Structures are given as structure tokens and as C-alpha cells.
Length: 415
Image 1 (tube, rainbow, N blue to C red):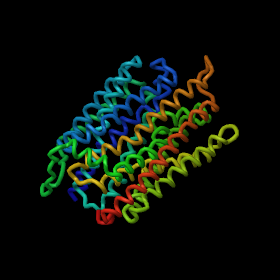
Image 2: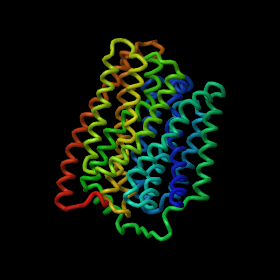
Image 3: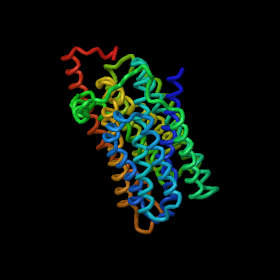
Image 4: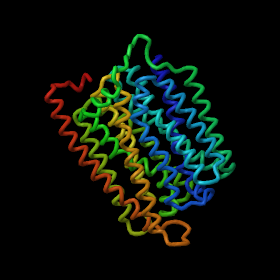
């Protein structure tokens, strides 16, 4: 029972971190008006946050193996609180970028800290399911940044909305500080003597790289849609009402929560077929976007809903990457290996967000209030490049990992 209490505390901290991370998604239009920026500069806000997140993953992994989950969750929560307070009073793009950087650094410390709690508190056979539950239930934070934030922004304004976000973060930090414990008292995890050697071993294993590319290719479609460009695409490009668009973003999260345990059960039962599922997720995402982008005129609501339902697999699919990190790395370097994997989809998301913003800027006529539907279509087409690169790498490292497993005669099921 105690293991579930510790997991729940860490999970709450992650839910709040996702709330902070996603809060810009539904505030994109208001941010552009408040800061006086176009689509290209607006994308820098999300890019700055994601770039810092991705860049911090490996250093945070090292710190996590050295200092444990509790300290990093407290530090990360405090940084995100500071970021929301700065964002609440930001009146120019420079201050807003600084605020999102603070949020990105704090966010970088959160998820892999919770995954370490799962790895140390739960038996190995339960890990795939618990990791999926962590990732998916944690996305409740995205729901909190969808409909509720839209209502707060509409009725109470920018400053009050983000001050309320900061207050939520403060409560989460206090709970972690008072109640969380890193690991069971009867479990001894000793840090490696040479941390850089541990990272080298983790990176050299093809299973870790398979996890990285799995995270890269599955996570970015849903991430880009939820973090920044989904809401403008639906409201400005497809003409969907703001309330309906917010509900679709919420569906993106709810669908992931429902499908996550199914994917976790699949990975626990059929570990040798995880990469097959990953490639299937990539193919379905590309197919759904193709149908929307090639539809003559504005896509009907049922097709947009289908797209969102397909994109719900982005989150569960990216969680498979962390299962690879756990399968092929011992407990004393799980933080570093998880950090390597967690770089994946955030690098892909940065590339996609920047490319989409630039293409939208190029296809927006001077003086136009917002990009046209054709501009959005050209912009979202950049995803196909990332899908192609990621799918090739997943297939490549799947074969390499299987050869490595066969050579060492590893037993993945007990792992």
C-alpha cells in the first residue's frame, strides 16, 4: 500500500508539471496579442521551454541518480512556480521566454524522477503498466490547462490565470517535501563510482537507443498538437468553435489515459513486439493526418475527431521508450538512461514546432489576421520528414537490439 502512496505523490507532482508545461497551448492566441508577436515568434516560447527540457534531460538524469527523486521534484516544482509567476506579469517576449525557460528546467526534473520512484518501489513485472499509468494519468494536467484555463482567461484575465497556476504548483511542492520518500527502507541503491561511465554504458546499449528513437517518433505528433499548434489549427484553420477545440484537446488526453494501460499490458506480455506496435502507431498517425490534409476544404468534425483519437496513441507510444530504458539498464543508472530516452520526442517536437511556425509565417499574407487553412496544411506536412527519419531508426535499432539480446541470451520476460 505504501508504494502506491509514494507513487501517487510523485504522480500529483507530474500532473502539476504537465499543467505548467501545457498552459501555453490554449493561451497561444492571447499570448500573441499580449506580447505583440506573430506565429514564428510565438513558437519561440514553446521552443525555448522544450529546448531547455530536452537539453536538461541527461544532466538531470545524472543528478537524479546522485540525489534521488524527492530533492529533484522539490527543486523542479519551485522553478516551475517561479516561471508561472514571471509569466503572469510578462509584458514583452523576452520576459515571457525567460518564464518558459524556468518552467522547462523545472519540468525536466519531474517526469524521470517519478519514473525512478516506479522503478524502485514496484517489482519489475509491474513496471510497464505503472509507467503507462504514470504517463497517461499525468496528462490530466493537460486537461487542466485546456477548458479551465480557457474559462479563467476569458473571465479573469492573463495575470490572475497564471497566478492561480503558480498557487497550484506551490501546493504540489509542499506535499512532496513533507510526504515523499525516494525508495523503500530495505532497498539499497548505490550510485556508480563513475557516473560518466554509467552514461557511456547506457548510451552504447542499442536498447537505450531504441528507446530514444521510439520516444522521438511516437511522441511529437500529439505533443505538437497539444502544446501549441493544435488549438490555432482547429480554430483559425478549420473554423472550429473555441469550446469545441478545447474539448478536442481534452479528448487527446482522455484517450491516452484509456489506452495507456492497454499498451502497458501489451508490453509486459509481449516485450519482443514492442517495436512492431511503435511502427503501427507511426503509420496510423501519418495516415490520419494525410486524410485531414488532403480533404477538400475544411475537414468535417468527425474527421478531426478521428485525427485526435489517433493522436491519443502518441503518449502511450512514447512511454514504450522508457520501458526499453528499464529493460536494458540496472537500477543504479536508470536515471541517466531514462534521461537519454526522454530527449527524443522533445527534440522532435522542437523541430516540428519551429518548422510549422516558419512555414505558417511564410504562408500568411501581410496584414492577415491569421494563417489560412492552406498555410496550416503546408505547415503540418513537415511532420512526414520526422516520421520517416524516426521510423527508419526504430527499425534499425530493433534489429540491432534483437541481435544483442540473442548474443547475450538475455531473458526479457523476467527483466
